[in-house]
Length: 278
Image (tube, rainbow, N blue to C red; front, side):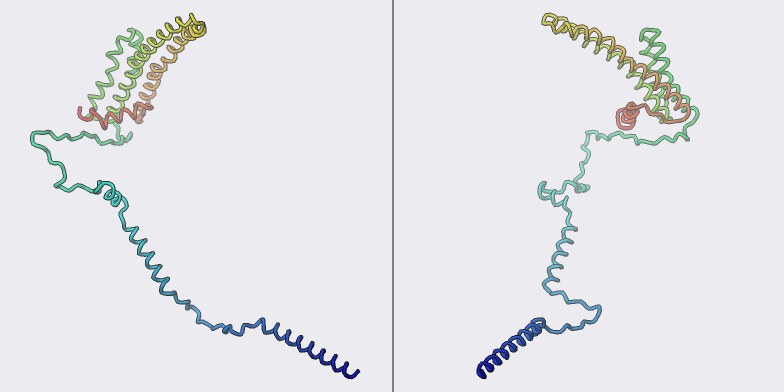
């Protein structure tokens, strides 16, 4: 009995010791014995950058600066063309005129913007007359069967040659009027001639195709197409008259009226063509 009690007491002490050791282990596990306590650093001071990182950053900065200073276009020209094509030739490289051979100097008339406020009453009158001459061309052309057109259409051209060195405003509008009359008369007649020839050819072909039954459908369509073509072609002379009336009114009021499409072509002829040397 006594031995049994002692044995139980020894077991209880052993169990109590194990539990006490487990508690000690749990406490010590949460504490790092090798961890140094934090050191307070003065405010405003940072960790010094290692020398190898500083050298790498300096190398990248130098390469970026070298790429920025490099002329990529010049390097491309030298690599693929042997020399820079964009280099300005020196005085010794410029072509010298050959004795006895004329040097061609391109004629170029600088383009100027016409200020309507600076246009005189006389300039406005002649510009309006140049555009209004289109009405004379239309009336006399109908009365004479188109014979008078060959004379009246040159009225704005005469005005252009009279004012080309005195008034750019009058010259520009006179050349617009002449071009418009040229398109509305000669251009219309040329369109009628070409269209009639094409219609006759289609008429013959459709008549021959009657033998294969296709011409039965095609021939009436070709016959009806010619009157429709004549009506549509009247857009040229009617447009000539309408635009001329508008231009005459606008220029007489001092406005720099521009006829669609024609004005751009007229400017190209006035400032960069043979008209600049006439």
